[in-house]
Image (cartoon, rainbow, N blue to C red; front, top):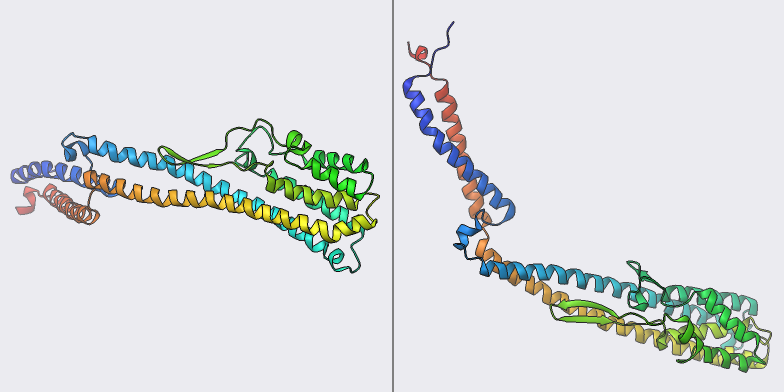
Length: 336
């Protein structure tokens, strides 16, 4: 049976629906893209080809992205530094607790045990001083090619060599104290020489926050020196002398208290840097909000309005498709 052709009237109507269908499909596609991006599909038309204001807003947002990364890195460094300093403080407190029997005059800790515990704390403090983030030494300005200070084994060997040559407990203390003095061998030979510039974290286009805490700073030297003096004395032949016992009862706790104050000072300095970065974050959020508002005013779309138009045009397109389908099925034989 031969297939009949659509009615001439139907052919005319089909041709008449082709252009509206094409235009509606294009409009639905454009509105869908605008819903997805939140921006007009044709910025040039919306801006009448004047992109100067949009360029300024985009530049602000690009700069804000760069600043956000810089501030974020700074905050991570500050968090890592605070964690390391907190760990050093914990080691000092732990060792101080072990000296309580000497302070109170009760039965003291065996010297071998005290020496072993102090050297363990010493090694942990050195490890914390050499803490790294993103492969950069936190307490050496982010240096990637070196640690902030020498290894615990190397520093311990220096201290033990000094202790071996000491005439008595007082001489031992003086030797180790001189080693950790500002101009002593520790600062001269075991702290990273010719350190690079400090960490610098941009919080504005022309303003940075610096973090320059070094392993040779007084707070670190005091902490390491106080622990090393206890360890070296407890492990020496002079450990049971009255001078050594007197030091463990009074001098060592005082040195640890000074070390604790130094660590607190270091944490306070790191906290001030973190606070400056936090203020930078707040200013940056305001900057991003203003730039985004300016961009949206230029090329942004109203989500509710766009969604409403998209729904209307989608319904219109569906109606056109339905009419097209019905007209394409009209045959003369249907009416004979």
